Each structure stands twice: as C-alpha cells, then as structure tokens.
Image (cartoon, rainbow, N blue to C red; front, side, top):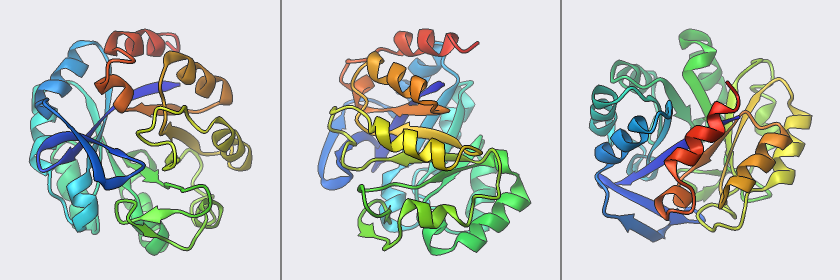
Length: 242
C-alpha cells in the first residue's frame, strides 16, 4: 500500500476542512511549494494536490501551484478540483500532473469520463467517489448527488485496474480513524479496481489496518500537518512494499 501525503488549497493557502465543511477550515502557515519540497526531500514519491477553491467554483484555480511543485520537486502529483472539460485535463497534464482526479463528473457525466479514460489512458486518472455513508457528495462535497457509490461504479466497472479514491466524509479531518469496513466492502465488491482510502487517519496503526484490508493506497492530510505522523514514518511505511 502506498501512503500519499495531501495538500489541500484554498486561495493559495494550505488548509484542512472538517467533514468537508468550507465553514470549518483550519489554515496552516505553510507555503504549499515549500511543504511539497519537504515531502520530496523525505524521499516520498507521490503527492495528492486538491484545489478546493476549484472544486467549489467549478474551474481550475491553483494550476500554477501544480506547475511550480512539479518544477521544484520529483514528486508524482495527482491534481483534483474544478476539472470540467477535456481541455482542463490537457492543461493539467501539460502542467506536469501525473494523474488527474475526477470527482463530480463521474456522477453527472459518467459517459464523458469513460471516454476520457479511453482517450488519455487509464493510468492518467483517479476517480474521486466521496460518500457520506449513504450517497455520494459532489461539487466539493457541497451537494448530494442522489446516487450511491455502487450505482456510479456500474459505469466504470469494465475498467480493470482503475484507481478510485474514496473519502468517507464523516471521518475526514476528524482524526477518528478510517472506515475500515467500508474499504473491505468496496474491495470485495469491486476487486478489479485499485482503492485509495481517505479520511480519518490518525496514526501509523490506521495505515497498517488499511494495508491489511487490501487498500492500494491511503491519503494522509491532517495527521501530517498536526504532527501525529511524520514524513519519515510514511517513507519507512512505503519502503516495506519495495
């Protein structure tokens, strides 16, 4: 399993939200590019970069920070938030994104997303299917979609090896631990996909539990920013898979 540090951005600032609520955000006095350089210097390979401003507004906002991180580090960066068109995907890939994260459109326009996967290649995408326990949330977790994760997966089940990032919004930013049972269920239902967990990770033992559950990866945000998990610990954790 790959442990992946996350940087969430609002107005060029590193932030964390509580359960996806934009009204409950914590800002950190970190330069996002400097933080990414620290992540790279620790020997970690991957970064999950989230444009929360873009997710809320429905357009790319922090593309320049992506470009700067790519130019200043060796990190393989996946970027999500505000992606609506094929042109957005082309812009992000040209800016150096290793993968593009598609969220709301997976629910609203699954045919378009499936076509993009066929055009650009399955390895260029991560689908973000974020649940409140019952239904998927869209538009930066602001709106209910009216669809379950299982319903939406019907459109993408044929893509063997597709990477899917699922956040349990009820756990995100809470430090209450990840939804182990949710990921076990998804892996059992859809064994041909690569599942990345997100939300609630508090400790290295949480990561070990997700590894045992069979997750392909896990995104870690708040626990790193609050010093509960160190970058060096993540590096050692990832080295075990080598």
